[in-house]
Length: 414
Ligand SMILES: [Zn+2]
Image 1 (spheres, rainbow, N blue to C red):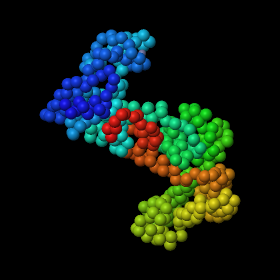
Image 2 (cartoon, rainbow, N blue to C red):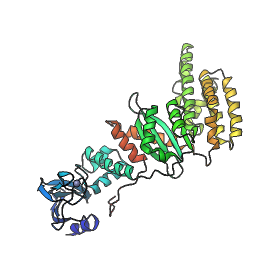
Image 3 (cartoon, rainbow, N blue to C red):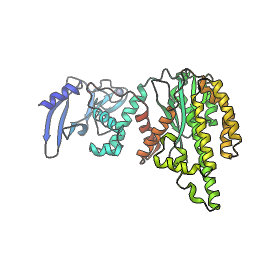
Image 4 (spheres, rainbow, N blue to C red):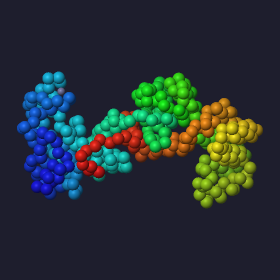
């Protein structure tokens, strides 16, 4: 039969052969029986060394990649072997994914789709359980983490994202040009969290790091200074602009309260996005709204202008000019009489060196990388709002953002 030939050509294993094939159009199902080849000894499931057979277990079903809308099932009766080293264990079945009901080929196929779709959708589309999708992704990610190359890491990005109420996840990114990826993530944002990440990646793999883009979170600063003494700390644009936005939000909220007390509460109603978005991204209506707000001579608008004028900072070519601009800007902000903006100015002054470091690194680190990763991670968290545990989130993030090598089969089914 043609299917047998296809399988022998694309998914063949020494020691086993495809024999009888049952075609069941009513159930939309094809059953493929696998038999062991008596010329070979079975192998131990632990060490994959040949071992004497012991007994046989019950027949097991393994799902293979569906064909023409038919589900394809492999049927095989596993043997147990008596391994001199591991005792009586189930034999090694090269197509099997541990205890999972799917074959490796189907697992790689499912994992491929799980990168693009919600896992629930993958499960429904290919008529498997959510757990089957989980173990497929787990297999692919485990392989990727064990086989990835951790060399040439020059620039690191650190960030923390929210996960469920009050929980943080520390993210370590490789933001080196040409190999940008998520390297590690872990629950909490303590010094020991970051330390755990560094150790997991291997400190010897981080000796070439020349710069770390990050927030001024003291726990991280401490670890980076101690463990990567040659790396420059860069307080990056994304984290600085975040501080600006938080400040503008505070000004706005305070001003609403003040306006309400004054009987003019509606002035700033629904205006948050006018101030947080970059001007060029405003819709026509938002731009109109902004124009109306300008006329009111509000503190919120003044803060907004201060932020907009700061954007120029990133265009400087040398740290000398950038420094001059920074000093001028902070002077203006300190005299704005707007407390949250003064706070930003103080922060910028305090960390002047770390901010100017960005201009001193060659080649310069592209500013949007950490922000891009942050947005992507947030989208994934939102999409999988059903994350039951951190380990599921962990898997999904490595899978989509880790740029991991994938297990290779002789034939690609995706
Ligand atoms: Zn063994």
